Length: 170
Image 1: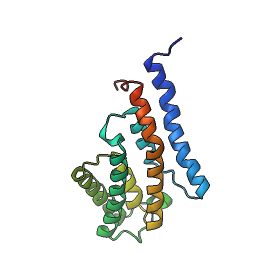
Image 2: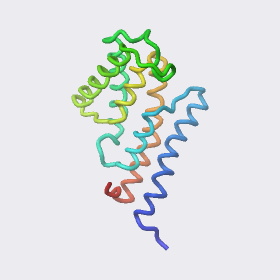
Image 3: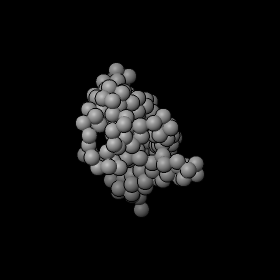
């Protein structure tokens, strides 16, 4: 008996998205670096669930998130927020961090538009930097490693998803 397209999506999409995160997580465990972070979830979702959108394409994923990282650093520099407490560890939002977030999201949006690299989750990546979770060069490299891992596994999944037909209307 052949499974209809809707049932295929309900079975395959969660497995593919979970598999993409598992792949990145296993690489991180092998190298001893935490390369799984919050903005990888929506990136994997877009690659599998919305494979025809620009944000699902490898260029947009890599360049969009890279811009997000750089914009996060720009936000930190503009607001002098580097010494301010990191939001996720202290659960406090200091004024410099708030302004770093505002600047970083605005810069991310502008640069992504100029580079034609639309990637909605890049704004989550920029907030990870601006709010203090990934505000060093070393931590930015960890972010990029996770992004590249998601592209490596997500691009074949995106093409597989395209092969099985259009995503269901949402």
